[in-house]
Length: 211
Image 1: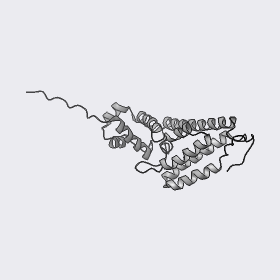
Image 2 (image 1 turned 60 degrees about the horizontal axis):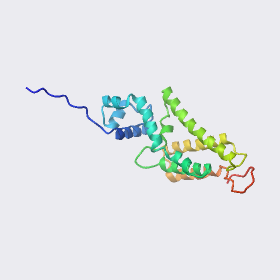
Image 3 (image 1 turned 30 degrees about the horizontal axis):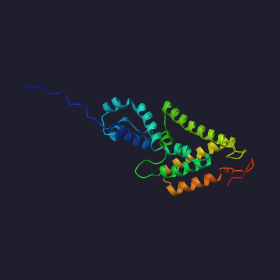
Image 4 (image 1 turned 90 degrees about the horizontal axis):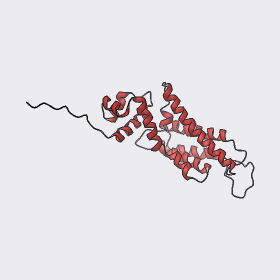
């Protein structure tokens, strides 16, 4: 009598499963997403999840990296491609209005919304550090723009960076609360009125009024 062979574990597309996990964390936050929620969303069993991704925490870390390189990459592109820091921030906020309200996926920013009600200290700290790193990068770019004469000498890089971060984070929460793309674009436009204007070529150094 032939010996019955054991069945091979069911294979799955790792990238697809990772994207499905991303959506689950994005929608429900880190604490609100259980392992059973993840296996249901990813269409795999718990053993396959642990074998492919490790535990829930390591899966979440990988999800955040994926988010930064996909849905959340618009901010970095704006700073890489725009000629001035003011143009970059304006583009980032307007694209946030579109990205935070895009149909067919959760609203807002995963890095912001996943931290809500988070009681796991390591996860909370990692997300806070990521947000603060982004703020520090904006501050550094503003400081460089002031030094280069792109922005007025009286510009406060720390305050302006924190203001920009507060608007961005607020837009994320507003999107979660039902704000439309048009609503958020209006917020972005108004926020940029508080930004100092880039100094035209040939204009002497000194403080200028916001738009």
